[in-house]
Length: 306
Image (cartoon, rainbow, N blue to C red; front, side, top):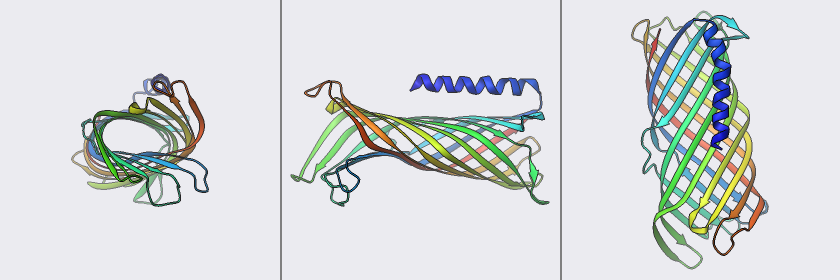
């Protein structure tokens, strides 16, 4: 997984460098601080008409910093006028919420057979590349850009200190220490439009609508207590909506408040492998698998144009 990420980032820079270096143009840098909430989860299940089901919900409860580089080309090249590249990293990587694990014998029943809660530590990073067309006027006060982008999300969890409830025999058990490791990554190529009012006004706004008709997700779940590693590959779609309120402090310095909503739905298959214990070496393939995400982000930022 990590080798693939490095290759993708190298391709980004190989593509951007000739465009940016060929023209001096204008640029800027932005620092954003904010709060992320939501969840990324996966579900596996048996027969669609009522077989067993298992659902794991991982929290997205963390503070983050984003650094963004903005480059405006001197002349339009290949239909591109602006290039934006940003990287986001979470600041707090411990006690990021409660991971919830639920199991059903019969998926269409509301009655769970097992339910557990554990503390989740999250290591998150995200990268985003945007290519924007020249600004086009919609009317006297509004303009828009068309966008082509690629967003990569990586969420790496360590889960510990589990409390489990077995409703079949009405028992409760607790275990301290690490019980599960989970990593999920999303690859999100998208098309979008950025609509904004006049940036000459002291107070101005913009709205971004991004649609991703094809998204890929990959995850790895290491159930440490069961010596079982589960890997999944899925695909689906996503939507990202971003709204920003800007205040122009001066011609070079801009303060912003923003809110972002992100929804991802994917389906595919999971493979399970026992690497130790009584079932060592055994595999189960082609388990129906979904990986989904829903998140909300609020942030403040300061942008310097040069």
